Structures are given as C-alpha cells and as structure tokens.
Length: 335
Ligand SMILES: NC(=O)c1ccc[n+]([C@@H]2O[C@H](COP(=O)([O-])OP(=O)(O)OC[C@H]3O[C@@H](n4cnc5c(N)ncnc54)[C@H](OP(=O)(O)O)[C@@H]3O)[C@@H](O)[C@H]2O)c1
Image (cartoon, rainbow, N blue to C red; front, side, top):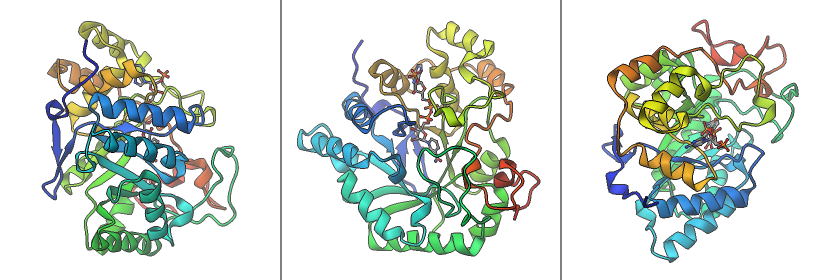
C-alpha cells in the first residue's frame, strides 16, 4: 500500500475566519520518551506522507530539530511553506514576553510566521520540565482574567505585526472563557483541549462550537506512551476497552485508529503523535476512507468516563486543594 496520502483528499475544517485547515494534524510532544531527533524524523516522514498540520510547542524542546526538517522539506520541494499549517505555543514562563517567545519559535521552526499560536496554559505558573507531580512553585497563582488578557493582548499584537495568523487558547474551562472572551478584540480560532473517548468534555465542546471556536483534541488516543508521572492507577486505557476493540475488529484497524475516526467525525481536530511510520500513515489515511457508522459513533459516545489524563498538579498554587481546582468543575473560577 502506498505510504503517500494526497493532502487534497484529507477533509478540511473551516474556521470562523473562513480559512480551511486539515481535519487532522501530527503532535510533536516526545513525552520524555522520544528524543528531539526521533520526533523531528517522524515530522519529516509525515510531511512526505502527506501531513500538512503540525502541533509544536516551545516547551517540547524540539522546535530547532523540527525546523531543520521543515527547511529540508522546503529545499527539496516536498512542500511549500504556505502548504503547511504550523501551530506552536507560548510556555508559562514567557507570558510577559510573548513576542520574544514567538520570534524564537519562528526562528527555531524556520517557518517565517506561525499559522496558529496558542497560550499553552491560562496562567503563568511555571514548573521545570519533567518535574515530579508533587512539586509546587511558591510563585504559582490562581487564574486571573486581567493577567490572562495581558498575555492575550500581546498575541493580538503579533497578529497585527504579521508574526502569527491566528490565536488559540488551550487547557481552558467555560468559566474562564466567560471571564475573558468579552475582553478580546480578535477572537481565538481554536481551543486545544484533552479529548479522547473516555474524556469527551461535551459541555466545553458544545460551548466552543456555539462560539465558533474550533476544538482541537490532544491525547486523542488516550496517550498510551505519556510520561510515567502522568499515569494514575484509576486511569482507563481507551484503546483497551472491549467496545473500541470490537469496532476496530469490524473495520480491520487498530483501536487507536478508531479513536481518530471518532474524533474527526465528531468534529474535533485530533493531533495524534507517533514516531512509527506505519502508525502515523494509518492515522492520516483513516480520515480518507471507511468512516464509522452512526451506531459505532453512538457506542463510543457511551464510553465517557470523565478520565482526565493531564490533571495539571504541578500548576497548583499554595492553598489550592487538589488538581480539581484547576478545572472549575463547579462552574466558577476557583481561587
Ligand atoms: N495543549 C496541551 O497542553 C497538550 C497536552 C498534551 C499533548 N498535546 C499535544 O497532543 C499530541 C498528542 O498527544 P500524545 O502524544 O500525548 O498522545 P496520543 O496521540 O493520544 O498517543 C500517542 C501514542 O499513541 C500510540 N499510537 C499512535 N498512533 C497509533 C496507531 N495508529 N496504532 C497504535 N498506536 C498508536 C503511540 O504509542 P506506541 O508507541 O505505544 O505505539 C503514540 O506514542 C502531543 O504530541 C502534543 O502535540 C498538547
């Protein structure tokens, strides 16, 4: 079977700006398990297979290596810059120096401009990469709408300067959005959020769609290779559920691919990660053929287990009860 999927065959999603972008992208977080070289090699392979959307971040520590791969693809005529949809994010320690962070990502990624630039987390609470889940930074503070908008306004400036095309938010909640949306001049085009069969965030999903903000789903397969520190005994493995296995068998595919088909058909943009060529090729191809039936979609809708995998403990502030405080589960911003 050919390893090339014509990007023109990959369905598109229309943003409120009218721009059309691929219905699937590739993630680039190495999860402490894969080196920057392994991740960038996968990105290089993925461009050659027909991927056109990549989810990067300053804090993944691999943008310079990915930039080399983008440059090689441009030089070899595999793709032009305008054909790629490149996303990256400002990390928590740069909320007051957003332009500096953006310029560094652009230089590292060798991409000239960013298509979609996210505020990775809605507060500047910093923790050292790879630190233990019990570590706390005494400078961490609860979410503050004005402080967030100060960071957001710097992103709006980047749009005006032509450094980025669109702004995205990530790891948000409805109460936080309610507090900041009225203060924005340029509405975000997308919200990156955890989405997989056992964590569907239906209420937030519906809220975003109603506001014309495109949901982008991270950990779409349930992140089986996530860092040890993010694994809890109570977590459910999406791709091991009997319902997922049965649907996979009916289609002759891996349950991981079922999760991606479900994501695309539901309307979120999944950004799966893999360094294995056979996996990332089937992840892209699955958007072009053999959709799930309505019955199968309905079965997966019942798999919701409220199983949040990225709990965010390391961002907690002094006085916070536990990680639930980060997610405003009672409908108001926890301070
Ligand atoms: N905004 C945020 O705060 C945030 C947070 C987390 C992640 N993200 C983004 O979301 C991306 C995806 O999340 P993730 O990488 O944690 O999780 P994921 O995409 O749900 O899972 C990745 C793992 O799934 C397995 N896999 C992938 N394709 C497969 C296939 N076709 N068949 C079988 N197994 C397959 C691979 O594991 P094996 O090695 O076992 O095959 C791979 O390492 C990240 O890379 C990052 O870009 C964003």
